[in-house]
Image 1 (spheres, rainbow, N blue to C red):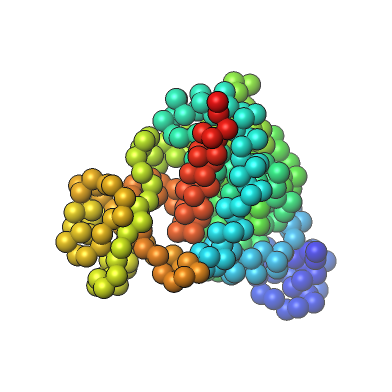
Image 2: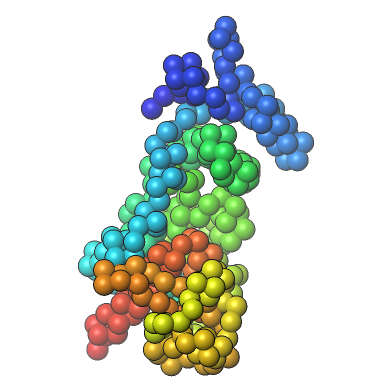
Length: 330
């Protein structure tokens, strides 16, 4: 892992942290200087200290590669077995049993099904076992100043992370997480951490490294985005022979009543109210395309990760965990 200074000198890569040939220390480029100034003006950060913090970060080329090749882009029939499998079934049942009281309290307080909370944590971190080993500050600086396609978004997350670290008394370079800067058992980005994390165990801190706060925070996140307790998530549909392209191009936000889909030749294969709003989605199964009507709760899951594959995995894992737990109960 090379420092930004060494990387720029040896490879000639032009990033926002640039080093003049004769300089002995890194000088911040214009965008980084502007960022530091904004943090000083808006949030009272000391310019000198923040400049030193940025200079000491490392550019992680592996993060750029990971961002350009996300696993969620795989065909569904390849993505699914990586995330909906025996290891997650067994781990999910253990997690649910161990934390049943917390999950039931979260379900009652936030009106979010416990299996959805368990499945989300299972997909994100294998129930807290894999919370990430990447230095979050390095990751966010790399993406904020070395990944132009989403630089504005990650500068916002870098801002939120620095505020979060200050609020919690964390040295900014001490926090570990994912390659995208997500933190803790539920893998919240810094902006989500500051906005949606809750102190579910009542110890006076919102600590997503702990299971209790993670459970409450996932439930709160889904509630804030409009989860509807007891409603279906996604309905398989027969869409053969229909004019599908305009319906698929309309996106994943529910926008058309199920009754209208019926009129256009998209037939739900499970019971669902005709006045329920839905979106048409498709996944690549090993036998070919499979179509579904995605309802409100499906869209809510995509607010956690904007991927059809991700939301399908959470839904299918949750459904299986609910079924398996029901069998195990006397």
